[in-house]
Length: 454
Ligand code: 0X9
Ligand code: ZN
Image (cartoon, rainbow, N blue to C red):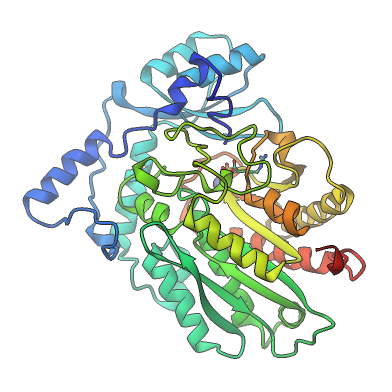
């Protein structure tokens, strides 16, 4: 994401990106009105418990072509053309290392304008709302709130279901897993973490590591993959020597949903919601951290998708992460996102190389190789800012303030249907996330980091 990166000063080209899509589509309003009429739906209240997934509206009508929002991939040939394309966009989904490729969401008029130009337009998703509606229908039909254990990772799970799952994991494996609450979200939801440690741990071999998912609400695969990595480690500890070695040598903290309010909003109201829920407009939590806060690739406009907030750590979610990282001073960290199949390393805010550039690059390459060995998928290792600058990220703050070897992994898909990844890809994506976690730990030799430096 890089929309709004020059909001403060830039004129028209970026304007359209400042205006978020209407949070509820016209079709949803029709559905909501119907449901309200029969008294099935309670109004959204900040502290209300999440309704079960079966309570959500089920409208999946086709939008008239004139109202349709379409996700497209285009490759502008100049900065001017890039600005023109961005001016047409309702949302920017992703950028790619083979820059200046853009994945944009445009309306029918925007699509026509793009098609009238001479640049090829690849349609990723014909109707992004219909795709979200189809996913919602599938989730409703699947009755996914109480899945059988072996079915758990066959479908996406809502916040309550994920939290109940990690809670249960800790109850069933008290010798390995401990449930912690590291803070509260803006709307008062708990920020849960699992702390995993093998029984064979010795002080000498110990490294500390953090993984988190869901900093961005619409990137559902990141919550599922993070939960799944914890699950694999805990359940595989007895019988899998590699997993046992990992947990015996690593104090691993797992935060499955770092932005719970945004995630609930994405399930209930707007599938493509990205930020937290500050004052309705939201803050991009991955622009709210205190290294290079306010710089390139962040915006001071509350309506921007990359709104950085009123100051570094203005949000309780980033404050909770800061407290944990300050206390634990992790050796390593992976912040799971989607999409694009990328392995990003510091810096994110500047193209300048950090002092550990070679090591970080080596570790990213090793992770990419181990991911490819799982299912043949390519994830490209690259320094964050060479993709596009993003200031105030968790990765830069963790590395910059504690020299934590911190990475962003953009999970599946490479392009495809963007944030709405088919559920049969949850398990293979989890295989890839786990491979990265194990490889990062194994690649960090004893001499790599001087703890005194942190
Ligand atoms: O923009 C972000 O916060 C991350 N990408 S996402 O599409 N998941 O929103 C990536 C941040 C990493 N840094 C850079 N690309 N500079
Ligand atoms: Zn993200």
